[in-house]
Length: 299
Image (cartoon, rainbow, N blue to C red; front, side):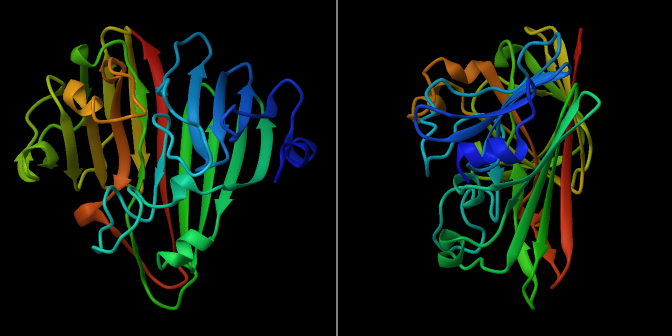
């Protein structure tokens, strides 16, 4: 669907418009009394969200290519149908194909000061090539003073569908060194920086080096204390039993071509997910919904 058709079908004067980035990606530009936001149709990728009277809450790398078929660095990539490397050992792009495929905008409406949008994705040539040809995804995004993202997976096959998923959210912070995450005390995690050894979280999550942790069997809300930014960001979730916390630190950032050398200290990832031991087995004809609701308060 091109910009002209999107505009005819969904534009809301002064609230929702459609534009094309220099790299060729089409995006929805959202402006309301409650917030501003940017969502790319490739990947149904929330790239920016700034509640009224707050600083931007979502980080986007200044080196993201924003080109067709290229993963966007930052924002909220959707990982599906696997997280990181493919869980069944077969080849496929990192974090699956959903984040690099064009989605369809199916619905947009303003209710009071919140904008409600629904994006859909079905089987594609790439998905079929990778063995996923009987599924449907619906992604409902509500942009307001809070940001709600709800991903529904439907299994249209006659056999169970096993998948992993994540809303791989990059949260903007004043300085990762001064950031703490509450809500994971007592949870067990796999430490990717230490050969995936299982470890227990004691107290707050802090950042003093490369961090890549998959917290298993946790449905708890998390609060990001952005001390340098003088605010708290809360992530409440449902339908999710995994939380992933990630920051590449200086040495990891140096290996990422789409991240500026000093940008690693401007974000932390706190991801709503179902991965690893919490991968979803979805019965034939069934659906599964995972949701994250994000709010910000000044401190």
